[in-house]
Length: 494
Image 1 (tube, rainbow, N blue to C red):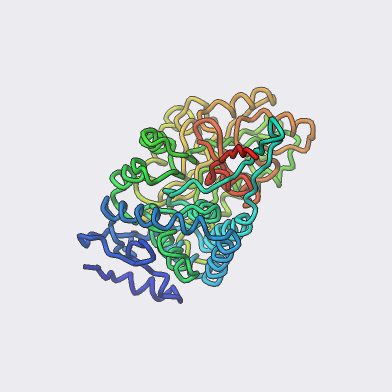
Image 2 (cartoon, rainbow, N blue to C red):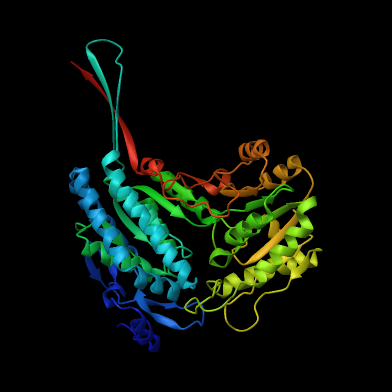
């Protein structure tokens, strides 16, 4: 039985297109309750109010979704690329038509400010538009044969059924970044979104249905049983690829579980991004870049600046201006105007951030700006720490909160070594006006993505992904299609 919460009326009052509010599993183009009627609650992280109950999918529904995706694969693969492109384009149009409602829904379940949520919808849908076009550009090759009686041809074909597991911090964009290229390539998808933010996924599924997606090509399993469902997705022989965005620890586990069936993998895992400010940097540009990188989504992104390194000659001036900019940020409900920092996602996130700050201060770090949790809500006021050392937990772990740790350094050689001294290798940033230094540092940083004189690096036309224990595979750009394709070689005797 579905439970109607008092806040259900509140959510409906904010969403114009009521059809976007979905609570059931989406399998084979049908909306289904979990077989036992089990549900779980979804909460607004700002005030912990319940947004309603969503179906709690089990192993049985996951297997049903996989079978539906497998049955749909051959017809979808055989469809002309131009037809797949047109269907994805209709999905793009419908998402844009519903941008405001999708943004409000996202803010309600995830907490980020509404302006950021609107930006995420626009950013996420850009992947649908991009890969709708790329569907028609999956090219092969002809290779000179060893003799005149043979022809050598290379084809690229869809890998098959794709399992996608997405996180709560970008509940719209992380889905479109995986689903759009998979469908464009001719694959079919079973999606397991985060149980913290299922409404965004289900709304996208509704719009996919309205866009004319054929049955079975896109399936959504909402669940509070991530371990059980994950084991089904990783062990199934019908699932040929897994794409996962989340923590490095979970990524390692999924990688092990996929080994028995030797699945193709894309893993976008944790980060520990350095942001470096050299003496010759444009200070205003550096402060703006640090704010954008560190405090977007309340610091809850995998590409947030975790460690801010400032060269000795710039240190005092940067710190003063940076503090002024941070103090001007407004924390509160994402639905309030002028709010720039929303709540953390849950109480566990607050406890973790508190613990990292406490350990750093106990080990000698200084609270240059004392923020933190001021009341019973999950709002976390920004914090700046100075005198931070590399052996502190806050330097070694991904913070996922609005905490800026600032370090001093003297030489480029020193800071490159410090920046690279981590198992992560997702994103890095630095600020300098010296062209020779820019090339030297950019090539020396051991990261998959480097922002130079900017704190924002995500771009649909660029390959997003990391190195080392931040994973492998790329999302976005022309390279994003490759992760959903296999290469087949034909040797033809003529």
